[in-house]
Length: 485
Image (cartoon, rainbow, N blue to C red; front, side, top):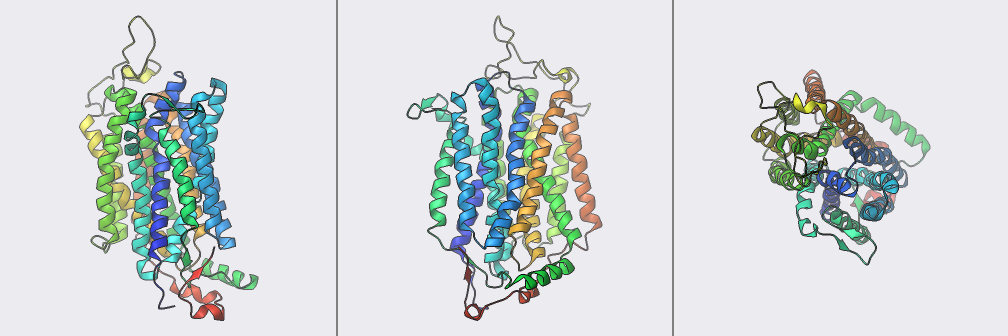
């Protein structure tokens, strides 16, 4: 067992899949609103929020199910294959929205997001494999890189959308559906899903021999009792709360990026896609640097609690300066109407819609403050919080199968990402961005208080003795790895 080495080929493959999942989860945030508006101009921001929420709700439900399936059957390949197939089907349905009448559009715009969200639930399996396949000495680095890849995908999603600008004029795929700048990424991701499925059956996925299933039911009960006695559930709950609030804030800011910038800075829908994509691109490059510093021990030896605290403070600062303070410029400008019409066409001109009563009383956040703090939040705060929580969470769980626990983490993260966008988009419709930013700031403040109060309990604990409670058959005692397929 001392001769075991981390299977870096399979670990890196899982890291690449995490990057793909991140892209899949965020590439549509800055373009979906424009896509739906182009298909039906009377679409509302509230309905758009439900489209985004349906993805997260499906992921929240499927994550622990995928994790339990993998943990009970000691298999990685079959659940991950099923998840990727769901993603493929959901993206194809997204492409076909261009051919649907309005009544069917309302249903399938949400249904395709649900299908993709179910597939995204297998992310918990990928994360658990990285944590349980690595040698103890490599776990922190691998988990950090894995979380970094996922967050990098989330940050690069809006940037990837820019690569499809040549598809702005509609084209046809064998007369089946129209392909344009909005759904071309979905068509591409459906192809990539099939490629990743093929790769799963090409590579081997060995586990660390310390991570092995119990021999029989009595041992399971013994192990469960031991886990209850040793796991610090308060610390785990604090990490989960901090993780889910950070995840929900990131999705909220990305979801509101287009309507927010269109209303405040008079950007058209095309400009919103382009400029928000540029902002997230710079943030993504900054996050790459931060993740490398954290993963390769340049900053990795710094107390993870301090890194999380700094990240939360930076997040809070962004939401604080994004409040409509009275000394900011204002009020907002209404959308200019087309000549001789009463139609607000956001592809023609940007501004605050006449549907919103709050336009005449709302101040405008200075553009440079919004851009700067947004890049700091996603480029610096996000990787600091996400990678440190991921590393501490895996370390607290120790040497055990983590599929279900990782599923629980992703369940709550997805649940918050599901609940917050519709609530905050409804608030945005009714009152503007004041209360959306204020609520997020208060929840961040609660996270900071939790971290400070439980500072001594939040440590990188390792429970290396747990594997002794698991059975190792004679044929495996001298093996370097255990592979479940």
